Image 1 (cartoon, rainbow, N blue to C red):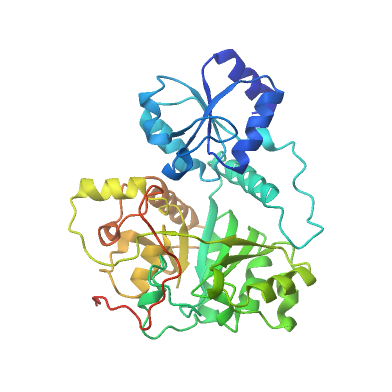
Image 2 (cartoon, helix red, strand yellow):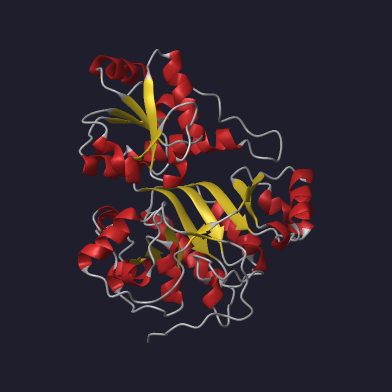
Length: 404
């Protein structure tokens, strides 16, 4: 829908207007509403942390509590994870919502960045627009992001790592030929992915990271390639050209003193005008223990419904997972190998005749699963879950029960 049509519909419905997402994009949508003469009543957010104080001078309501305050309302979704937001609104009985990305398209945020440091508001707005477009086009198999594990090795050993690096006894780099085969299978099925997230462990510990990044940036279906690093390693300058690609972004997790080469890494990126930004990490959600809880089906469905990582897809040795916890738990053989918890792209038809079957199987996996068997082994990862310090190190790998 055109922006003008959406604005007119909102005005004509004469309902309370609520912006879903108390963040950067929500703030921009609020200013657009003000310009158009639309009164925004409040914000709502899926994180309980966001409701502790006002945002832009307005109340922030915990999204699951909306029904206790409103019988009906119009929602402008500002979060990139639009599917999660829409699913929750439908569950609560709210059907009047609009993708905020459609109102943002006229903003001048797609120009190339003149400096190395990413303009994060523009980055967030662009992400929102592209993710909302992908969601609203059901004929396209679109993913907001997919993690690709290129190494199990890490320069840190954080006890609470949600990617379970603290459990690997003999971590190794992933074979580049296997990674290329996985990427080819993935791109044969998916029409577009917003972010290919290159992760580990610490991705710069895999000496083959440059050719893996090039493989991803060269692919026309990839909008952006994001390398996640912990600020401990400065890549060799001879590999700088692989990071200077317009699609490439380096995201640095700042763990304070543990990120011992943070200053040097930022200096190198800025000097070479490589797109990057640093995130100060102060806490993590506590979900990393691997143990069966023996919950009922309904209990695991509730865990899955509230999980903030259930749509954080991961690619691991040709297997496509809905969440990174599941991908690493299977790599570790720390859970029973339940074939319904992932899709093995190497075992699915990828030829011209069979590709539609595979696409529909993935749509079913992404849209209609109520829970995964592996949910019973996870503590759960709700946005309102318990927080833990991110930088507690363990001297040796944590023990766990191995299957198979």
